[in-house]
Structure formats: structure tokens, C-alpha cells
Image (cartoon, rainbow, N blue to C red; front, side, top):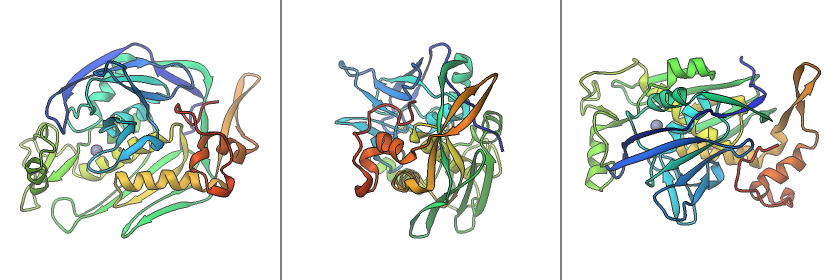
Length: 335
Ligand SMILES: [Zn+2]
């Protein structure tokens, strides 16, 4: 296990990149700027005159088909998961992300290019201390044969399983204690994937117009090989990418989660289901803050977790407990 760091971080310098939007097929400019302490990750639509912004928070999720889409009113931004995973992997709590389209560029289909970008920007420690959600009892969300659960764990760990009928994917599993080093080495470069006929179906429906072999692994009709000439980056690239998606979606909790997530055949909808279930089960977790004591910093359970939960997750708590004020649109875990 690796303990969660006590301080909040932002990016040191503004960085930008440019890439194709998976759905529209047109170019998208993305800029990551430093964000003040306790502001969380926020997306700004720089192509709209009023520059509306959307908090990177699961309560803002408006669609989970194909990718995770967050929205506020009529403004949306989709495919947030690979960038959110890179931010989580880099340990960035606060940042302002400007995008001049309704989707984050797909880059090479992985989080690798975003990891490079964040490294280029550098990381800056902020004065504010983090607040984390510590899971104390297992919480499970089930949808048919798909399950996802989170259990108590001293760190943040993700274990994923997939099971496709035979072929190149077949049964794969991957388990990782999520640290920046392991994220970069083992997870970040795993690319998104799809079956050739699925991709063709999307094209026929005017979707995934930017999808090419440069940004998606296309699995051959015979199920035994991929169309990409360079092959796979890892033998088990598929499950590694599923783990990447999970890390990116769970980052929408808005603060670090201390627990072990175990996902079987999960996807964006299941990840959202788990986050909602966590918030609806306040007896199975607690908020933990950090406190300076002399030279060291200690973890400290926030005494009245129920009260803190009411303040932060008010609208989503079970009805009989939800009398707190509405959740502010920023990070739910601000101190
Ligand atoms: Zn993905």
C-alpha cells in the first residue's frame, strides 16, 4: 500500500496540446492551467463566448455511452476519462482545463500524451491539505452480470476483470496499487479498443468520425488479431485500459478515495453507479482530513462524517438524511 499524500497540488505552468475529437473528427485545442486550492478540476468551454465551466464531478455526468460526458445546462464536454486518469495519476487536485469543443481530444486513445503534457507543466504543492474519503465497509453496485465493489484498503487500489468469449481478449485481470510511478509505467499507455464491426456501426451512425487506427485498437473480425500494424503495447492492454477508464471515472468523486475497487465487466455506467452508491451509503465511509502536529502531518477522521456528507453530497444522500445545503458546484471535498 502507498499512503495518500496530505497536500493538494496543481500544475506549475500552463500547457497546451491539440488533437482530434473522437466523435466529431475535427481538431480540438486543450489547455491546462493552474487552479486555486480547493477548486478541484474544472473544464471550461473556450469556444463559447460566455466561457461556461463544468466541475469535473460525478454529479455533473449526463451520459455514459461510449465515453463519460459531463454537463451543466446545455453545455457538455465528453471523453473526460483519459485526461482525468492522467490528472489522478499525476496527483493533481486543482486545475482549469480549457477545451474549444464539446469533447476532449482522443490523442492516441490512451492517457500517455496527457501524462507527458502534465510532466511538462510540472507539479506545484499548495498550502491546503487534502480531504479524502476512506471506505470503512464494502459497498457494491450490480447490473446484471456486471459488478463493481469497493472495500476498505490502506491506499488506492484497483482490480479489474474482463471476460470476452475466447479470441484475443478472452479472460484478463489486472490489479494495481495506484501510485504515479505504476500508473505511468503500467496503465497510462493502454489504448481504447473496439471490435471492427462496432467501429463501422458507429461510423454509419455519424459517431466516432475521428476514430482511426492511430487512436483505437481495432479487433479483427476473426477475434484473434488486431488491425493495428504495430500490434499491442501490452499483451493485456485491454484490461489495463479498463483499469485506466475506472481510475479516470473515479477521479470524478472530486477527492482521493482510500479503498480497493474490484470491477468485473465494468464500464462508465457502472463506475457512475458505484460513485452514487458510495454517496448514498454514508455509514460505509468517512471523511478523513490531515492535520499538522509538530513537524509531522497526521490523518484525522472528521468527527461528524454525516454532517460533512450532508454539506458535501446533500442532494444525493438518502432522503431521510438529506437536509443539508445543496452541494456547491466545485469540488465536493474542499476543506
Ligand atoms: Zn477509455
